[in-house]
Image 1 (spheres, rainbow, N blue to C red):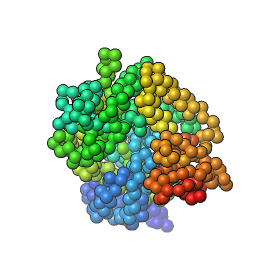
Image 2: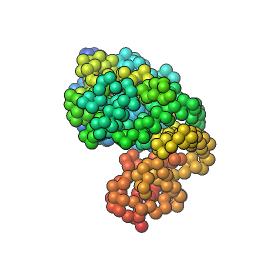
Image 3: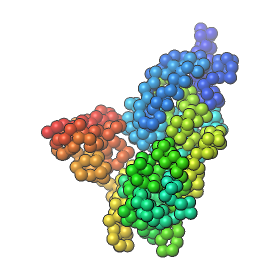
Image 4: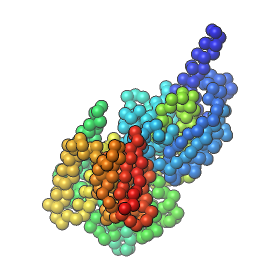
Length: 513
């Protein structure tokens, strides 16, 4: 009996070492068989069915990397993995909504980190795994995955920001720091300037950060929001004037798509993820640099930006052995080799320090531009989901303004919407609505739903067209929404949108009338 108890104790100790990151390697091959036994590697042997959520453009690469892990690890681990395309923003929301149904491994933007920890959606790293991550990665990326001195995720990239790509045959180098000169160059050449100013608060904020404005959100332990926001201020009015210069030009396009270079753009403000697309279009004419300055009343203001990191999380497991194996896989996927493979495939910027110093990474002009923009960037923290819709409207209101009073009215409308959100009636915060590119709107109008039965909600009949997309969300916010992927309308018709809740998950269907 004593021998059996001793064996069981040894097994528990071995598994706890692995779950806590007993291996300090960036690969899955232990340095020796002795080390393998000490780390409990043989105890992990087995086949595990898992779901992995990653961005669409790395699904195939991730499948290959998991196959490589299966073939090369000496722990006897085999993953039968279903790799699904779930974007970093949707992954976090879906995990918070229904942790149990979420991916076993999932990627997310660092601004969602605190919410995921609060939702108990992240399996904490152990001491040895934490030391490995700290020693291998950019300090900023490590900080983004840390709460209360504990690491809850693995750094994946250090490139979640944006800058300016341009066509060198249209924009001369001496004009790169002047928004006004770049606009003039585009107008003279009959080329467009692509930057999302009516469709994304993420990009609109660059003008406001450039004048020193802030929008800093925080939550208490009960999830109540507080805010320090100076967008509606003297500096905010300056930002609005700079924004209007771009929006008033006939060559402005509210887009961040790298493909815009094929459609007549000479400038696109976007991030590293578009590098390969743009390189394929412009070739040697591709340039990349930090954002320009804009001039208001004789003073220059360098445009700011959001910056951040992408992380990989491990969902908490009831099976300690499976959890330990998943941490092994996460370490492999986010290690030196895994990050370099993603850089080579899709030009994602590594958080791994060795990868950052690699010759190919240093030579990537997109990542160089991101580093040039870094002094003007604001780290993207936790932000209320409603803010993205509220701030996005600034772009449309500024464009429609005809004078300074109109610009001030745009900022006042923003402030009022913020107040309405912070003082939202509890019933309104629980209410469900439909939103999408439907009924002549562009993801900017909520169509209310009413409860027709227990946990069942329906919209009024809506005239929908084939190809239109929609979602259902709660409290006019993106913090809770269904389904993971947009609902796509198959055929023109009049439909009632129905939501059926089942615990933390929800099923959305279209009922033709």
